[in-house]
Structures are given as C-alpha cells and as structure tokens.
Length: 610
Image (cartoon, rainbow, N blue to C red; front, side, top):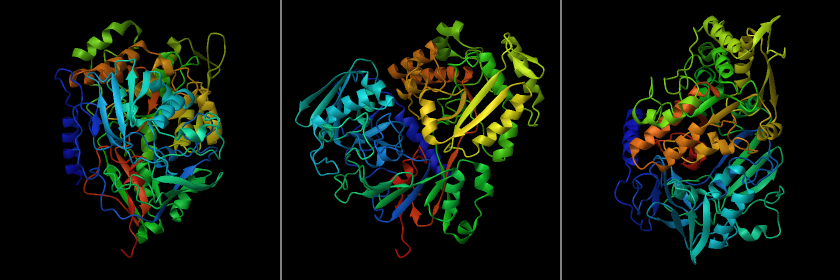
C-alpha cells in the first residue's frame, strides 16, 4: 500500500503543479479552485477521495490537551482557546482537500468565480447554509466576519485583510472581494476565513469576549458543556446543515468529541495507557519502537498505526530571537548551531531513527538544491548578495558532529566564530569586550510537541558550558508561555512550522519583515530580510511552475543560511496509537498524510457488535 500511495501522490503533485499559461480570461463560476491548474475532483464528486462515504456515524472519542483554556473564542488574541474549535465548530466559504497541493471546494459557498488575473474573487452562498442555531448564513454575516476578524481578530488574520481593497454584496447570496495586491493566492485565502453570526455580537465586544461568549458557527459540532481546566465537550449537531454535502460525506462521524486537559504530557500518556484517552500522536520514533508494549497494546485494545505522507518537512527546532543581541549576529548563531551536537542527541533520544531536517522544504522538490545556486535561483538572489550571510549563494550545509558526546571539532569551530564576533573566555566564562557574560534563556512550554525538548536542552546546556555560555532553562505553563511568546520575551524557544506543497501568503507571517515586530505574530525569530520578502513576492506572482520552484528554493536558501533555527529531526510519517474501535480509510491515504484534521475528521467508531 505504501509504494502505491507514493506513486499516486507523485502523480497528484505533478498534475496539480501544472500552471495555466493560456491568455487570461474570466473564470466562470466553479465548484472549486486550485492554486495552479484545475481542481482534481469533478463538480459531481461523491466525497473527498480519502473519506469513506459509507462510514458509520456514532460513538464518542476523547482527546487530550496539555494545559488549560480561558476562552472558547479561537479567533481573537485574548486568552487561549482549545485549538480544535476553529475547525470542528466553525466553517469557511470553501474547504480544503488534503489530497492536492492546494485546492478548495465549495462549503458554505456553492460556487467561486475570479477575475482574469484573480484580482477579485466572488462567492455565491448555498441557499441552505445554516448556523448551528438554525438561522441562515447571509452575505451580511460574511462581510461582517471578514471585516471584524480582519480588524479585531487574531493577528494571523490581519495580513490577508490588509490586502483587501473592497468587499461588497453583488447579489442576495453573492459577495465579492477585490484585492490591492497582485497575488494569485488571495482568491484561495479568501475562501478560508471563518464565518460568524453578526447579530450575536451586536451588544458584545468581539475582541474582549468573555468565556461564556461562545461564537456561533456553522460547523458539524457545537460546545455542549465545559469545565475550566478540565474538559470541553463537543456534540455533533443532528441538524447540521451540511450532512449530505459531498465535501462532508464520510467525515465528522463521531457523535461526541471530548477534549480533556492534563497538567503535563506524562499524565496525559498515563491516561492514554489506561484508555481514558482514545488516541495519542507520538513524535518520537525511539519511544514508538520501544515503549508502546504496555498491556493494552499486547491485548490488542490499543492499535499502533503509521500514516506516510508526501509533504515538506517544514521546520522543527529551537529558534533564536534575533531581536536580542548577540543573537542578531549570524556568527553567534552559527556557533550555537555548531555546539548543538545533533548526531549525539538524536542517537540518544530517538535511536537515530529520525533523519535531520536539512532545509525548510526537506522531503519535497521545493527544497533547495545542494551546492552553489544556479540559474533562476541565482538570478533572484544576486541583487541581495551584499546583505546575505555566507553560504546563501555559495551553498550552506548544517554542520555535522562526529557522533561523540564531546563534539570537539564543532566546539573548536564554534569558539573561533565567537572570538571573531568579539567574545572571549575569561576564567571559564564567555564575555564580551565590556566584560559581560553570555547568558541565554530557553523558554519551553509544558505542552511542547516533543515531550523530550527539555532533555534536548539539558544536553545542550552541557555543551554550551564548554564554551563558557550559561544556558538557563525555563519551563512554564501554557498561559504564561503564550503571554511571553506574544511579546517575544525569550532568547531561544521551541518552534514548529508545518509547510505545504503550495507555500503562499503564510510565508509572510512566518518570515516577513512586516510581521517581525507585531505582537502575537508568528515570526518568532524576528527575521527582517529584504531577500526573503522579495522571494515571497516572486513566489506569489509566479506564472510558471519553473518560476515558482525557483522562488521557493531561493527562499529556502535565505532561511537555512540565515541560521535562525537549530533544526532537529523531521517526521517522515505520522504515528497514532488509538483504541481498537477507531477506524480510518486505509485504501486511499491523502497526500498530506496525518494532520490535526485527519483524526477526527475522516475516522469513525467501529463498535464490536457491528
């Protein structure tokens, strides 16, 4: 099945990557829209290809989050909401297929239409689209949602809104957005904004909503009850308007989804072993191979499932806050990367089973090509040659250790770089010319995606001591972490950014200069690079597959050679341990493999008596 999956995935990616090169014409209203080419599914498709249209409905599933919550509004900056709410209780005009690089199909909207160059996009609402309280979704709701979330919502929504010049009703069920920027992706992003009920907020402050002000959505689930610090229980709406919609057929099958909250990852794992939690994702290959032999697995009550994928690695690792000196010096960052003994740490913690991330788009044809930049990639980078760190054009590779604990070669190279940057060791302490020691703090949250991140840093701390650097490790709860992350109050922290087969405007949020100083933004490293901004512009305006690839590969070079992150290992496949009653379509896995949407979206509960 695995080889067939990758064969099919490659064909899908290749066909979806073809770019329309015909003269620009007005696009007729359509059931879907793709970044390049046409949607893979016809207008009369029965269901998403990775969903089972005949999946049984019913049963309950319990998932576990580490930490707590203090809001049930996932669209504002204030507070922390359970992350599951945004896609289980709310919907957008279009929905994404995870079997294609970037294609949307009608959800609340029955059709989409664009201008000749996608300078505008128009959606026509389904006549039967309803909020969970039974009221119809109107154009007024759509316009209010875009404007309110764009101006008062979480910063991640504002970049898109800032590129909307006008939003107007063009009919009783149609709405048009006109853009101020030449960017083909905006037409797709417009289809992915959450739609809320305007009248609910007539007397309420959206940005400062209270816990009890739960936004009314159109999604399959509603919040049935909750207890702060304990749980949020979602119930599938029996009157959900989209039950028979092809896009929804075979999805959202559980009657109840209960989100339990735990103080730390160890307690969550113990709860799973006792089957108080229905499933658990495991990100450590060594632990997967050696520690999932407890009684429930041996009895067959818990099943271990592996889900392959064909998406880029993204970036996972420890990010430097370049807003703070001396982390604004690439030589210091390179020294810190050299001191991180990945080969030794990887062997110690994962048994060497997981390969290292070598670029932000590893595991895909979007990744930079080894060696010096050539052709169009070089042309794009050369205007910025004087501002780029060494290796961007010439070629940069992450340093490799010798596999031993002491990592002598890289430690020597790190000290040389620190000396060049003006630092020297006095009485075993690394100091600057003013005599100030180099002290760095690494900020970790209790629900980090890797439960062993603290162990990573404890090993790293020992390596930095050999350079005379004092690394202080702070592990705090989610609420404190989010507050400090929003203000960029850290030297180093753990970061993971998933990247798709069709990177687009989200790249501005991750690495764009405009987002670098925005409170609550996603540019954690504080990266301000004219070259990166230019590569993103090129990527978004590309009209051919070749130009798109060149822009992404050039951006990848700017990112990896910028030494902003200490990359760790990539996740080559998803690993889900789950109770035996949970099933999924095994005959057609999506190109994107497992993701937070995969379970629970297309899984179902298979009772023993079936």
